[in-house]
Image 1 (cartoon, rainbow, N blue to C red):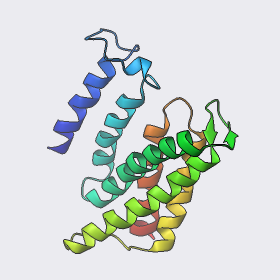
Image 2 (image 1 turned 90 degrees about the vertical axis):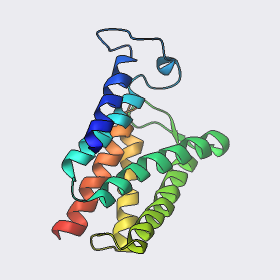
Image 3 (image 1 turned 60 degrees about the vertical axis):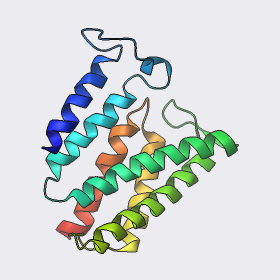
Length: 168
């Protein structure tokens, strides 16, 4: 049922990009950032639900890393960013990357805390795993060009969380 909700949104967002075979409307998405960023963001929900259908905690942690991490990276980097670096064609700031890591840590603790509070299955919660995952997600964001962070951060976070907690 969750895929029934997420996939149509991803399709509509794709149809609103310059890459669409048909133009359903001028949404302004192409003028306000990376052209496919919103599509990637919606599409990754579908992918994560397919990969982890029985572990919505991993989906929540993965989306939380993208939503809060990327959101805070943008705000903090925009407001306080003085130390600019460019690894793959997009300017990033050290301050934004630190903000991303901190936001991932806080959001991960809140999400895991929520799942523990309601008695849901959260595989092998470990603060050190969350720190490692937060560092990897921050690195992945720093090397993801042209909006691909909206796919790469949640995907790498979900897979890494799964590998570290479910398989090991």
